[in-house]
Length: 141
Image 1 (cartoon, rainbow, N blue to C red):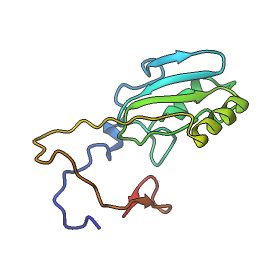
Image 2 (cartoon, helix red, strand yellow):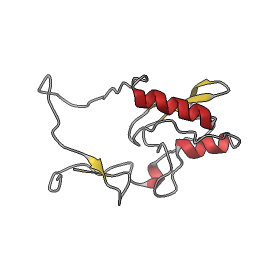
Image 3 (spheres, rainbow, N blue to C red):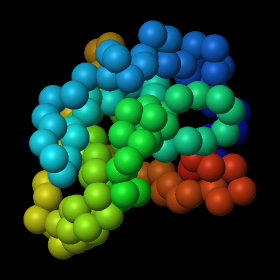
């Protein structure tokens, strides 16, 4: 659908450029108690392991909390998205947090930072996206 468009090369596609300097010691924890950890995921980092050898929030949390009984990751953020992620330390807490997300009792807010001159005050993107199961995490139109 986007073939033929003149777009910049994705700087995050090269594994050597990703996660530079991000490790468990400097992945910012903004909250922690006996049940949960909330971390500030930087842009360019995967939420869960993907292709290649990049670290992910999951891999860093798993190494930091080896005794955690839960799946850890309550929700995901796209690789290019920075923001807060909730990490459950137990299976029961993970299950309850998933219920809160599924029921809409947890609200998420996304803010986009744009560069350049925007000529229109508002607009609509009409490009349908869906998961490409053969080439995750890519999306198809």
